[in-house]
Length: 151
Ligand SMILES: [Fe+2]
Image 1: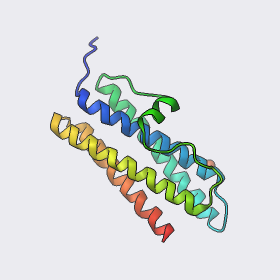
Image 2: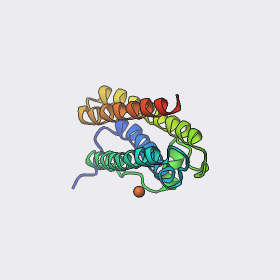
Image 3: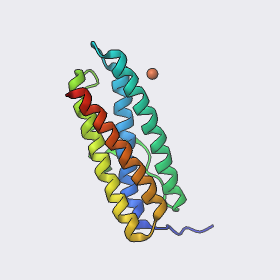
Image 4: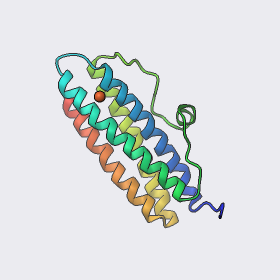
């Protein structure tokens, strides 16, 4: 058994992306529970799809970190220490505040994706680069949808 960590310079930004993704998943899950108003059905449904996709992505990112031989950060304390995604906002916010907060979270996660892509390209870690590229597209799609709802 080797303790060697492959591409440590990629593990670092990947860990931040994992933290962003997980915190955004928990925030989206809380909004799925607490959203109210005329758009309840649409927003409850959209947030439901988004949190499921985000939790699945967090799992994939954590397992990529493990495949590189590094420990995956876990737990809300570790994630909040690493991420720019604000976790402690009001679960009972109005829908526009929810949409804007989620948009900011997806933007932070997209920014982290591009840091992984740059580090992975530098290191020759194509698999992590592919994963981050796929995640960047997903976050940008979410931003488009949230913007369309805010418009
Ligand atoms: Fe549900």
